[in-house]
Amino acid sequence: MRSKKIPNDGLAGLKQNWSADMLSGFLVFLLALPLSLGIARASEFPPAMGVLAAMIGGLFVSFFAGSRLTIKGPTAGLITVCSGAVLSFGGGEQGWHLTCGVIVVTGVIQIAFGFLKLGSLGDFFPLSAVHGLLAAIGIIIIGKEVPILLGVSSLAKGLSPIELYLHFPQFIANANPRIALIGVMSLIIIFGFPYLGRLFNKVAAPLFVLVIMIPLGIYLDIKNTVAGSLVSIGDFWSNVGFNASFANIDTLVFWKYVVTFLFVNSLESLLAVKAIDTLDPWKRKSDYNKDLSGLGVGNAISGLLGGLPMISEVVRSGANVNFGARTTWANFFHGLFLFLAMLLLIPAIEMIPNAALAAMLIYAGYRLASPRSFTNTYKIGPEQLVIFLITIIATVAEGLLVGILAGIVVKTIFHLLNGVKIGNLFKADFEMIGNANEYTMVVSGAAIFSNYLGFKKAWDVVPVGLTFIIDFSCATLVDHSFMEQLHYFMEDYVSHGGRIIVDGLQDLHRFSGHPFAARKSIKGIRT
Image (cartoon, rainbow, N blue to C red; front, side):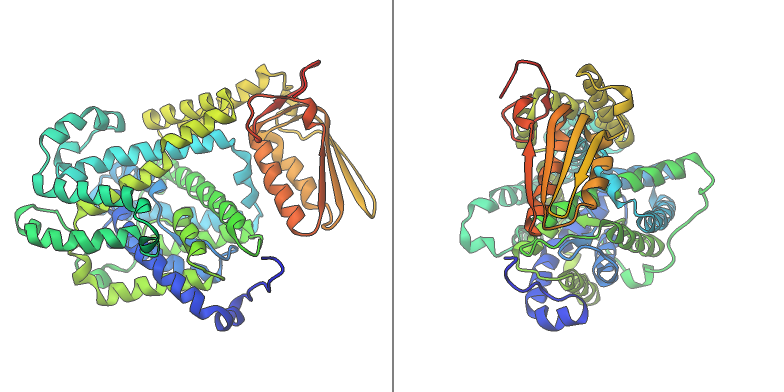
């Protein structure tokens, strides 16, 4: 694909690619509308504020973003943070306004981080801990949405994530038959959609659910028989205004959530941008710092007006690539169609059953915490599964920041037990030798997640188009996170005309047969 002409950016790109980007933006809009409503409702925000965030992510952030094919909008991964903040600030309208203030401050800090070129900090965190954090978020989402799926949300108020799962038998025993019918049927459709064949691959699963469940809800008359069963938007445009409150900016709770939003929001978005870069048919490389600043602009505007925080959302972005998007205008068109929907379709949107949205979010949670994520982690190495599981347990029990900290601590303990010196934990130890045709990096000591940024800084200054030799013959430990980052760097360098030779890894003992498994120097062992 790199032999084909790379699509233009800016107004020239709009003129060149408007038809492909508009079509993709429309199809992503069909996916984003119901998900944005459901994410907002689960986050204790007014449902339409999720659509507002996605609208801003498309109409405004498209002009500031450093990535071309990502879709900006609310994500299921921030539900636990948003709902926790709203409830911590007293719940209801007060909690919503104060949480919006947190989002604004988070956005301003993200803008500053981008200008300070801190977009690469997302590479610091160990991948097994990050994946464990996302899996834990998925587990929490499923627990929160099952009562809504069954029409017994009143029984779930005030329950912790663990208590929600313990109350599942009670939820099932007291399920509302009409709501549960809609919820379970929606769940069957969403999970079964991938198996329906090519005819349905061009249709977004959430749209298919709505086409069936809205008429079913009307037939069952759930609007008049079950209170709170449908999406409620009200007078959306009169509620869009200055909705952020900074009354609690001098409290520890306010800054606790700023740090939490800043960490989860920025990290998940940067990981999504990196993932979508690998899917870009033209292998264009995003500017992480610019994208982080653009994300901050979007979060600041969204928070001021009452909307949810946004990220570069990986599922919608992946769909955007599959639908044939070529430039950032696809994200713009997705926001434009959301804007038109809120102008013209609110009466139709208010016919959507909340149980159908709950099914969509349960599927989103399942994707984050699928059994495959556990087995794939184990295949990389048993020690990665331990880090993954401890991160999940700590996150579900104590929260996101405690969870990721637990994962980092466990990963560091494993490294120390494997002989990594304390001074080598954060310092990259290598020697660079270069000439006009060839560069060589000789790695000494450990190459691990916590000192990866030092290696990355050296890689970034290697001229493109040369032969680059990376010699691990003197390395003592190369961890899984470093191996995966090395893989992405190699792909990028080769795609830009360079040649990479990796030497010495074959002399290190693998922790498993996985290509990204950690490797350790053990005298006399060869794999």
